[in-house]
Amino acid sequence: MWREGALLVVLLLLLLLVQQNCATKDEQEHGCPPSSCGKITSITYPFRLKGDPKSCGHNRYELACENNVTVLYLYSGKYHVQAINYNNFTVRVVDPGVQQQNYSSLPRYFLSQSNFSDSYSDATDPYQAGLKPINNWAWLIFQHVVFMNCSHPVTYNRKYVDTAPCVNSDSKGYYIYSIAGDLKAHDFEVGCHVKLVALTSWWGFDTNNHSYTAMHTGLVYGFEISWMHLACENHCRYKYGRLYRYGYGNGNRYCYFDYSIQNLRCPLCNRQRSRIICGILEILLFVAGGKNFIILIYLSFNYYITKN
Ligand SMILES: *[C@@H]1O[C@H](CO)[C@@H](O)[C@H](O)[C@H]1NC(C)=O
Ligand SMILES: *[C@@H]1O[C@H](CO)[C@@H](O)[C@H](O)[C@H]1NC(C)=O
Ligand SMILES: *[C@@H]1O[C@H](CO)[C@@H](O)[C@H](O)[C@H]1NC(C)=O
Ligand SMILES: *[C@@H]1O[C@H](CO)[C@@H](O)[C@H](O)[C@H]1NC(C)=O
Ligand SMILES: *[C@@H]1O[C@H](CO)[C@@H](O)[C@H](O)[C@H]1NC(C)=O
Ligand SMILES: *[C@@H]1O[C@H](CO)[C@@H](O)[C@H](O)[C@H]1NC(C)=O
Image (cartoon, rainbow, N blue to C red):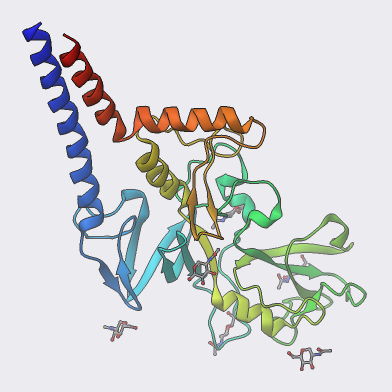
């Protein structure tokens, strides 16, 4: 009897130790002093600047400082960081080919929504194209700017905005148009091909009165991408403990950014499951996975002692 009690105490202490170890590791990650490069003065978790101590930030979110410009590598491209928004887990970047004062300058890289793996259910990339699970196009936090190269003038489709005299076709008899927003199948004109796709998170386009200067403004503003998968992991695991396995899209549990509270939510179920079952599941996971687990053990230990 005595021995069992002692064993339980040891177990309890061990558990407490494990939990504390995790807490200190977490604090270290967040406790690094922010780094700075050019106009980005607060580079902190999950980001780290190349050369920062290894314990700072997350190694998948390493930024570089090149000629006093903060640079983010994304797929085969590299982009200039304009802003890091820790409030909504987004970073705004701009293609280095786009120069503010030069309306003829074009993005260097071809990039569209389909480059991002959260367009599919098995998302593993560090950056995401949205802050919500995929349900419709409204999930994206950027829109496309599509450059079309046409063998004839297109005057009857309002979406096609003439880029001349800013951008010129290299060959005679070709016309370059730009389109903001999503290109639907019926927007494809015969004799036109996609020359370049770029992104912008600037939503100020007047759809009835497009101008190429507005599109250039959008490109100069840049586009946002998010690190919401990591943010969700951290947020939901903190709430529910280690048992929370973050499933995205078609999983039972999914996490999203709720604009009304300006924070993440991690419901355990999607709409398909009944609310009551979800509620029970949520409580069970909360009790079993989080800090409350210790309390539960402590209570049952107390009960065990007093009963014996
Ligand atoms: C780097 O950029 C910052 C902010 O734009 C500026 O204050 C600083 O003078 C720049 N340093 C160098 C060496 O260009
Ligand atoms: C995006 O995907 C396209 C098509 O696969 C590819 O050509 C392009 O290089 C990718 N963009 C970047 C920046 O890697
Ligand atoms: C994220 O926050 C920044 C700064 O507050 C804001 O400009 C941006 O529009 C927000 N992005 C999204 C997708 O809500
Ligand atoms: C503007 O951009 C175009 C296309 O990249 C380039 O050919 C031209 O030299 C640039 N002009 C200036 C003044 O930088
Ligand atoms: C437009 O397409 C034609 C034919 O493929 C090509 O010769 C021309 O260089 C293209 N123009 C631009 C600016 O990409
Ligand atoms: C369209 O935009 C241009 C430039 O922004 C402006 O001068 C013009 O008055 C606008 N036209 C209409 C019909 O709104």
